[in-house]
Length: 78
Length: 171
Image (cartoon, rainbow over all chains, first blue to last red):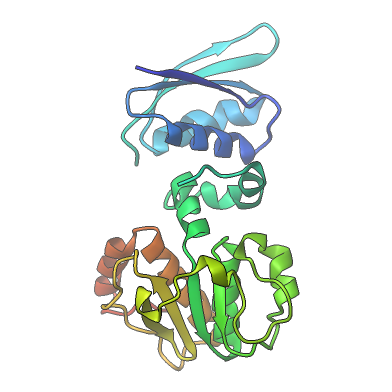
């Protein structure tokens, strides 16, 4: 299992999901992607978008600096 | 298939968001040249839609109307359309030389789109009807051509079958 990461704390919608989606496409089913994000929009939309395209949201961890880490297990696709 | 450049991500990001497109689909569109023949508004709209999606577009006519090579190059730089809009435009060197390498498809009155032979042969596609609005004809011509490039032709033909074999309009 490969584990990759991406930092989208400086991105705004819709580029937050664009960046994550492109990164997910580089990975194989079963791999994990850790997404460092900031703000309400990605907290709300990324888990929903990932699930709708066949991925599994594994965990969301809040950090002291106001950012959060979302771990997504890559699925087989929609 | 090379990765999208940062400029392409910025320009085509909203297309990447579409479930049917994504990054892989966008790269296919960027690498799938089209030859478009025709005249009139339907032709203009088809070329504009194809070029705006990032596909290299080769025009086969003396361009006129709202299509202008410079304007197209401005909003669709990856289409490779530059210079005076006359005759053949587009990245000629990037295209196969033999016309036999293209599937020629009449996708509507006044619009013929050439699809790369790498795409499935679209032999079952019915053209739009002459009484459809030209903008509808052109937009649907581009949509059908792009679906073949994206590998969505099977879903499209099933959908067409459910509508009585027409790929065209909704009333």
